[in-house]
Amino acid sequence: MDYDLNVDITPEYPISWQAAALNGVLRGTMKPISSLLVRNAAGMAVAGRLMGLGARVPGTLPGDVSVTPDRSGPCPGEWVRAGRGLRESALGSAGAGLDGSLAAGLGDRPREGSDGGLDGDLDGDLHGDLDEDKVALYFHGGAYFVCSPATHRPITWRLSAAAGRPVFAADYRQGPPHSLGESLADALGAYEGLLDRGYRSRDILVAGDSAGGHLTLALLLTLRDRGLPLPGSAICLSPWTDLSGPRRRARFWADPMLPAGRVEWLARRWTDGLDPCDPLVSPVYGDYTGVPPLMIVTGSTELLRDDGRRVATSARENGVPVTYEEWRRMPHVFAILADVLPEARLLFGHIRRFLAAVEAHAAKPGADAA
Image (cartoon, rainbow, N blue to C red):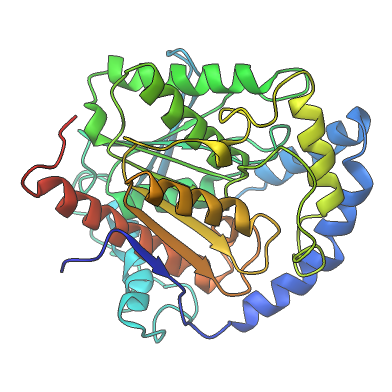
């Protein structure tokens, strides 16, 4: 089936009880804790340790997912591959949302033997469904000071399933003590490392969330400005794109997760000594002429909604096809909550649809080939 590539989507799914409950939990825990800790280097270190502990919780990955550390290239990271059964189950429920039906998507997680569940017979190679000639490069979020590839495996294994390819999750340097420039240098190194492995640029998907979405956009602008081969497409989940100044007050209280004052404090910290309106510092000011198709996903009540919306508008004005999705009452980077949040699982079906539209667009006569 053909899908539009340059389109605005506001999914009309009813809000699940899980989403309503999680919004309340985040408002009562994550938001006040962030407000308390993100005030100085010591508090940031504590926050980093807490997030690190979360990544060590056992049993959070399905058995059909493989994670392989890789420190051989310019930027260390890990390879994440979803098995054939997970590819079927993850997209079986998510795909239900494509025609508006929530019968599978908003139910319980698929169980072995159910219609949308795990396929018990993998027929040989565990990752046989993955196209090893293609790859996704993923940059985790965390405001440039917390999180890691390990914390974001709920996203990366599902992205592997949705995209039908392995995912390389980059473990880029973060502050403190590292700068935005060093993070971007690692992102560029990770991308060039994939090219050196023999991947064609058009077969690379670049994706990231929050600060990782910032890094994704900065990388696209850097590649374009340096005349380097561009990836086939890019996906930004709740990207942080404007580090230039105070935020609009509209969603200060509506956002259940991000305290606006702490986001502004972090922006001042990371832009100290830099021009905050430089497009590599605040990608919202970038000229996106010539970059590949983009998918940008936000939540309607999140503080960073306009960061993504403004980039989508600007990129379209520069001639870039953009799929912009705004999910009603979803928190910041809700995809990471896919283990418990039905809407987050549905999102990966939308990602698969976007990638199908990208392929259809690239196959049209006159489309540029990398």
